[in-house]
Image (cartoon, rainbow, N blue to C red):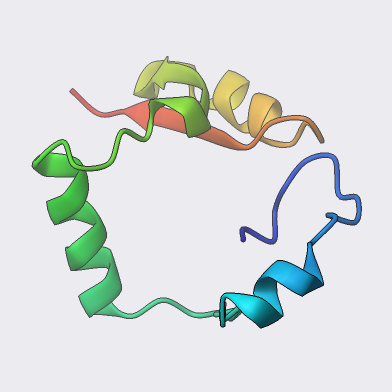
Length: 83
């Protein structure tokens, strides 16, 4: 689960399924270099597609608009391209 789900509302969980299927729910914070490296590998190998998480993609010259967009409560992720 991702803590920055929008809107920030409670999520229904079937605790019976968690119990009977021995599911494990864990929260984490403060990613490490290893997790960033692993994430970039998964994205680079197209194992994970991050596009559903992206809102708008901005050129670096439009950084002010990108930051304004990122501040909106319904925005999950905003990308700034430096190419």
